[in-house]
Image (cartoon, rainbow, N blue to C red; front, side):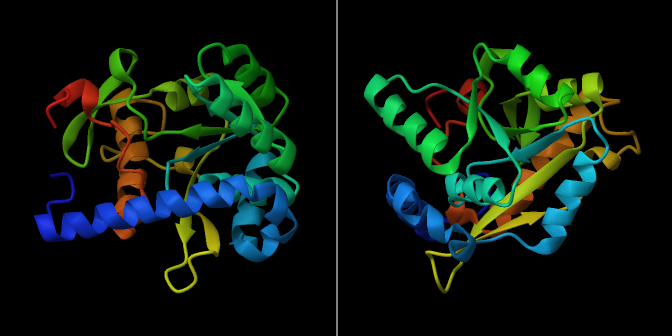
Length: 248
């Protein structure tokens, strides 16, 4: 429905999505073993590194806007290995055992600092004021707390935190795309596409000036990444559950 493709193509996309999910799970579990090879497994082009350094030089912190594409955990580990400490906003797991394992790998293997989305607003403020980097997954269903904004032309509840944080701190917002190599699936690359907050929305307004316009800019970037490699997105996400209900 969202991509406008038929059943046959959809099945191939879903199959690819589950294959990516399986590979990503194994890679994440093995991260403590493969972290020494992270530079080999995940390419982080020099232009992306320079863009991130330039954004940080403004002294207002940086928001990395990303989504559940390819293996986002490996990508984060690669950015950290390049010398950029990351503070990622996350939603706690309901299963305490799973939560403990996931957090241990994230913090000990990759060195990523985690911020609980339910109670971490002060920590986000602290990181940005200190000129640090906050990672926000922008493709989750915000449910009753979000703003209804089109995602692939379908109304979806969208988190407005990135825009609100930009209005408060004027921190550069950088969209990040993670891609799994088609020919060698164990290898990945990280791509940055400029500073979104330096751009204008479809009506010529500066980022942050109009909430809907700015959220559409965020969604359009993620849509573009998914359209390019739809089999790498986590289609299991209930992105439209709040607006379309369980009967999708």
